[in-house]
Length: 271
Image (cartoon, rainbow, N blue to C red; front, side, top):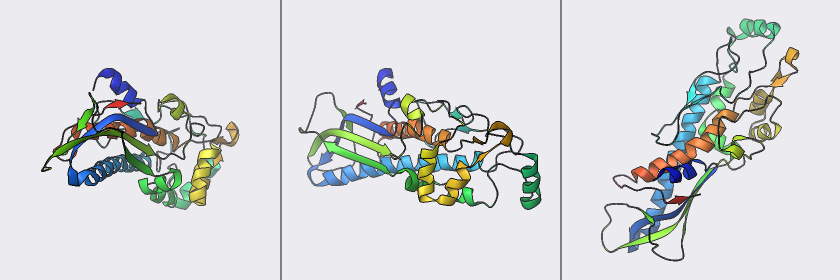
């Protein structure tokens, strides 16, 4: 894949579309091959979502009590040729400070002052499956073109098939967490997960959380900091932005580069 193609692929987020996607198949195995392709890509993206959710548990829940935001970086479960890791704090405003009275109360009650860690509820809820429940599923689909073969189409080979082989060309479409809109996540407008995130609040995104889990929504949406005007502390936003603008396109690209099992292949035209 050339540099310009990689850039177009990298700029697809929430929805990755691979045009002129082609694969070989035997007469009796078309449905099996399509299902295998769709299932493998979906599995790869789910792995990335689980990895990002685990990073949330590691860097947000239980963040140092003396910090004004999370540390750590977000990266990829799969390898990558497209993107760099991202410092989690890069797009975030400083979190509103907690009062001395609250910190004293928390220390007496639970024995520490770490951020977002109290009863363990938030940590238990932060996993890829719950994120799909809150924000929408992962979908992978292939639609045939009206013709069998197109000059220049990229072939995705599935090896080990026997008998007469045909080539099917079409469009591979990947969608993830599609209930999240650009109004909820500015990175969806820019394509850049380091797009600054506001401390004024995110009622729409928190509404999706509350719809699925009112208690979790209350915890994440809570505003604090009397001296700074009861500011919202963004937590989910950089993780969702990184997943949608980086993890999803990277997972599709890496799978098409590596192929299925022993197969080799690469992406066709993307948009």
